[in-house]
Image 1 (spheres, rainbow, N blue to C red):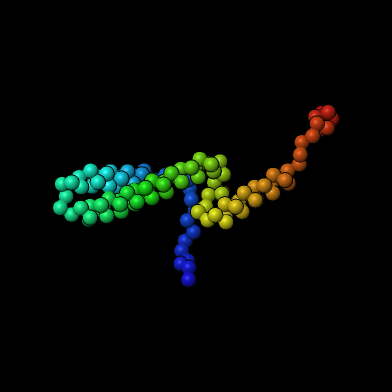
Image 2: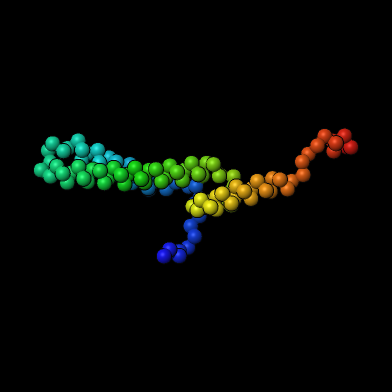
Length: 112
């Protein structure tokens, strides 16, 4: 059973807040690992550091992916979508439109 929600198109824009949050989570993970010798709860510190590192990496990866997508599709906003099928359809449609355009030949230039 799938949730039916509003369609959200990928815009290719990065969210600076998410980038800062991801960097801060990585910083917290680093601090937890480096201060592990002083901690009374070593297992908890390691677990929290792993969770923070995974969450921080996920946020940064997600924003990097959005940035790359935006760079690749900055001239074609109609192809901005989170759904892989929609991206493939947009590329196929773009290819079909290119086939419909008449090819230029040297004959037209000679007539002028």
